[in-house]
Image 1: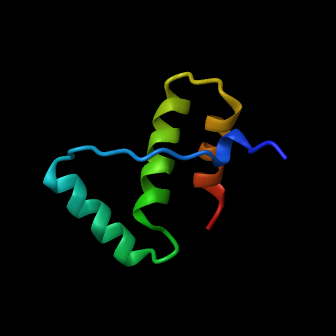
Image 2 (image 1 turned 90 degrees about the vertical axis):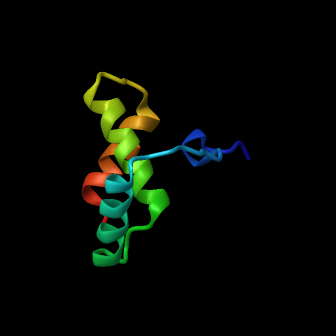
Length: 69
């Protein structure tokens, strides 16, 4: 059975300002249903969607970040 493209994953390494990392860590501590992967995926999908990306998988990740708890 073909893999759903929205399920494919790659490893990503990035440097972020310490203040953003601290904010992410605090958010995750206060919202245990979130983890660093879900948070970064949601943030990236939100940025792409809000800047005009029309890809259906990106839009689905964006909506999941808004409505899945």
